[in-house]
Length: 368
Image 1: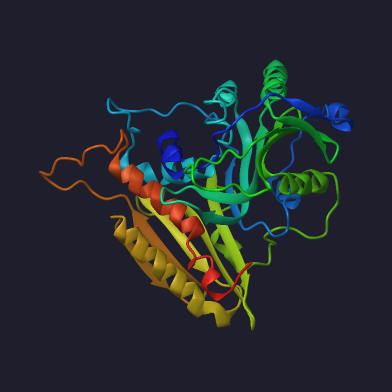
Image 2: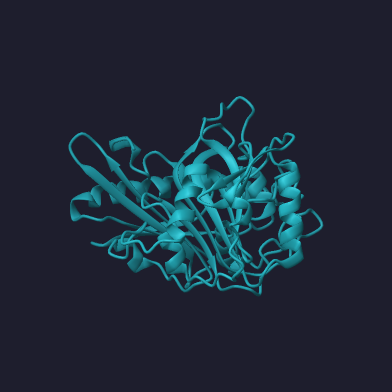
């Protein structure tokens, strides 16, 4: 999401720092001095097989990963309404895992660095406060077009100096900070939570929220694996244009005492109207009712947030189209909310609630 939206939804990161100690060993010499040109499919194979959500931004080097957005005099993004769907999907699909770490100190060093592939992979997402704060296990994979060179060396030097510890994880040097997902002060951290940063190749940067998730990614990157997260045989892939510059998918499998329920959805920019499209699908025909329930739930939520939406169903999918509201003639725009466009705020909360809604992810029929 854009910088304003990211502050609202509380996606990675704000960190508490401490004086560094060192637990490094073999990882100090583990860097591979070779540019990594892995394809999206190869990167997908690195992820834990129980990964549930993917945000993908790919093959779009014309847009720097963390370039400053164009804004108007009020600080709001300058958007052509006809293109807001493309913008919205691109922004939510672009990871910004370092933006709030040390007040953006590290993220600023990457501004203007072009990426060929950026993936944010998560599992077990949940909202933990009333302002969109999240808890999740996951990892951002940033593949830059070129070697980060001296900037990468400087970045690692600063990470080493500022981090809590330096560890060797799966033979790689990992800089460890405390939990960094923005949320309310009263939310208690889980023991596994943290911010784990690794540069396994000159043009690769991994930022994870759980060491075990990162360790799996690092190990699978070096192996020839026979299984994969979100395999090709899942029906939802039929609704995803994986060659587009940005998209998002979520596939949930939840078990109850009697059965397993599968619900999936994909998010993409609409090709026929100025908006976004959510396509819901199911793995098994017996779960069509669960699919329709999830789609109807999101339709209600989109309407409640003030976005025009329509839902069409067929045997294979339920397709929800959402548009940005048209300005009301002769009605002044709503006043900013803490310097944010109120529609921006609504859209941000809509997306974060979508990702962790208990009905949409099937948690009402079982537990993970």
